Image 1 (cartoon, one colour):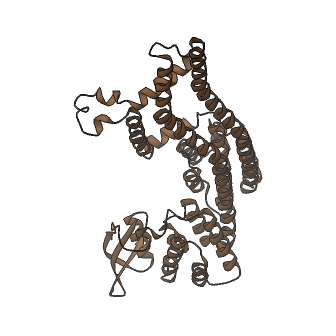
Image 2 (cartoon, one colour):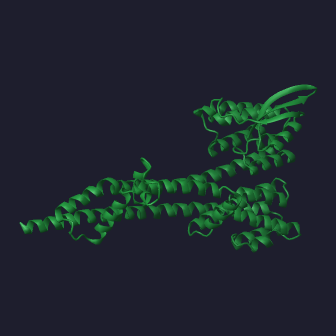
Image 3 (cartoon, one colour):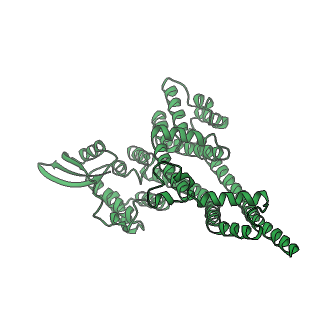
Length: 428
């Protein structure tokens, strides 16, 4: 959220603006800069500014974030001052919004704000894990090393997302085209073919069952029987004459809108994530991605000197699944009571036994971060192989599905025409 503020600094009144996740977060950030807030208002204006006029996007690609992180790490390792490094990266960034964010962060850093706090003002760009790891790097004096690990982590996330999008793009496009083509045929072509069949064979003509089903579907889509059955709607201009298909599509869009709003609530999101973990194939992909994220993020935080409890809290929010996040919170409660982390993880419904075993080995040897990095590498490779395998299977399945649909429609249309034409020929 964006805020405007008026504050006191060294007896002088200062005005400005900034972004933060909440009003309290902005107050904390301003206090660290030596500013005493007097008035804070949330900026709700929609107009004003290049980005709000549609000239840019308030999103940063993972690729851009990865490049920024790696370059910042290199410059800090080379001894370049932080403010100067940020200024150089701001000029080199290809993303319009990222340039604005880096400029604001540079301004905060020059004002004395820690880098982690400056990042925390932009939660849509820098995740909670990212911010906490930067803070740990600043506190431990190993910011350059932490940024290198963050760059690797962002790169791994970008690679997995790219593979998933690539695997899903083909079936989504094919399915969309198929649905549009099917309903286009039902609305515009099949009714004309139906009239031809009736003119050839008469109203008592016997048609194959699949042809009759196709004609019934077409008639249902074209007519307005659903809307006209609702009292008072049939007499409304335009609406009362809407075909059933249009009405169904509108209902689907409205239902999808409210369903999306529901799964954005805490209760709905937890239910939806639970459903995903019970869905075949999808469950396997989600679990492997979650384990890989947990292992790499937890290892990075532990190697940065973050406590086990804090690392579990941050890692749970980074996994992206509320059900597994709750399991980690329950595990953190048991760790707080004196248990080793490997014990509650071994009793988990979703973490495989190998994770608990590897954790136990890491706890015994004092090398949890090293062991979990190997687990992350293993499961990221598993995800890659699984997605490639699914992509290879989906393509022939979609081709078979399309071929069967085209063949069924062709048989439903051409078969009766040929049969009726033959009967008419024999009658003459």
